[in-house]
Length: 149
Image 1 (tube, rainbow, N blue to C red):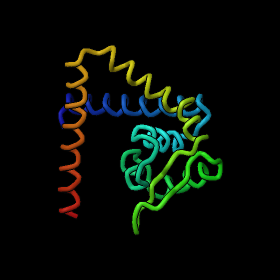
Image 2: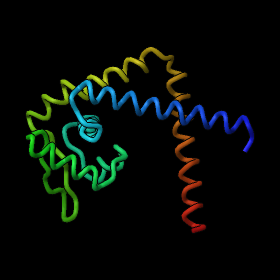
Image 3: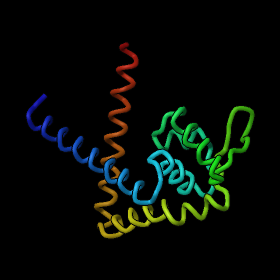
Image 4: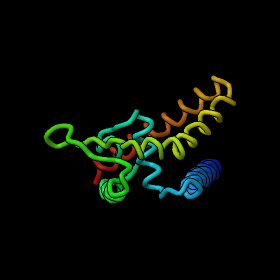
C-alpha cells in the first residue's frame, strides 16, 4: 500500500470515528441510547413505520441489538411491532414515540439538513456520489472475499 493511500485511509478512519462519536454525543444529549437513536431515526426517516428488516439494514444494527433495543422501546411505549406478512414485522411509532422523535431525532435530521443546505448542490452531489462509490466498491471487494473463502 502506498504512503498516500495509507494516509488517506487513516484520515477516512479518523473522520468516520469522529462522526460516529458525534452521533453518540448527540444521542446522549437527547437522552437516548445509540441503538434507540438509530432505530427511531430510521423509522422517522421512513415515515412513522418501517419493516424490521429495513431498520436493521439502514441503521447498521445487528438483528440481536435491534431486537434488544426494540423490546426496551416497546416497554416504554415508544414503538409497537405489527405483523407485515408471514415472516416480517413492522416497527411503528406510538403517539409517545412520535412526540419523542419530534424532540430528539428530528433535531438531528434538521441539523443534517442544515449542513447540506449550507453546501452547494454540486458539493452535496459530489459527496453523495463519492460515498456511494466507496460503498459499492467496498461491497464488491467484500463479495470477492466471500467467494475466495
